[in-house]
Image (cartoon, rainbow, N blue to C red; front, side, top):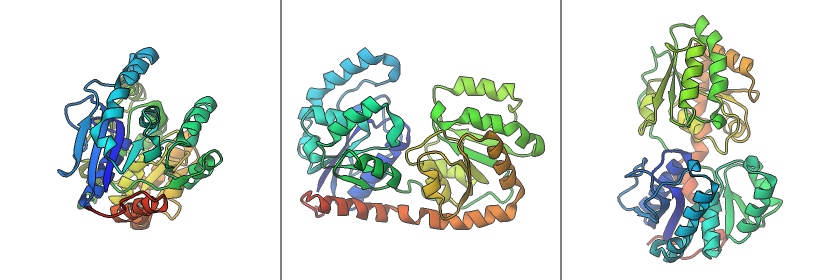
Length: 364
């Protein structure tokens, strides 16, 4: 089967880009012809490497950024519509998988929605009611809409006829642990308000006053780096909290960490929790919408009420002080990740193709 992905910018580092890479690689290794079509190109190469069998294509060699302003962004998008409409990889695809709303809107505008599946990576309430209504009208034109959680499926299904749940797959290969003597906490994600690192920093003074031999590594980059650095220093956490930037091989950092903490205000499907669990790390997380509660329903971590800073402090202290608890949660992580293996997720996608009579439903 010829499968094409359409994504806003495949060269940036984020959860959607990593998920697209993993899924494209999995389809290619199963014998399908796979293309990843990136509308924009901020960097020279994709941050996440694709299988040699995957074809990477670029519509435009400019970068797309919210900093451009609404008018310039709209003009930049409009300029690419003809190129999207005439893109050979999209025209020859048996099915197009669009990653997030912008790619889906461009497919709709270019008349390709009838052969495409729209994938949503954010929670349903991410956008305003008006934008949600517009999005839902557009998504009715697609073969199906794929969401990441059952809660989101129920919400989308109120407005759309064909909504399926297919979660993201595990995207890391665990390395041997070196955490026996580690006193390092890890967190991973963009440095923006969604990820709640300002809340996490507020929770930490009491932790490191009590456990001064521990530290936290924050992997990721973003617009709030300067503000978070100033907040860290003002809270007296300079010697305890390290901003490490993006890591292409994050599994190496997991291997030298003791447990994972997530302080997000909201999520779509938190891939970082799945990665951490796949690497055997216990987890402390806000029970934010959506994702953490479903991922950790069978154990593997401690859930804290959303944005409860004192609760987060107490949970981190509990994890530091209770080795037996950490070992038990680490053992439970195998149950957490079992439904998200590449083989299992690939099977769900093939079942979806067959359900909606997307042909040819065979390897080539």
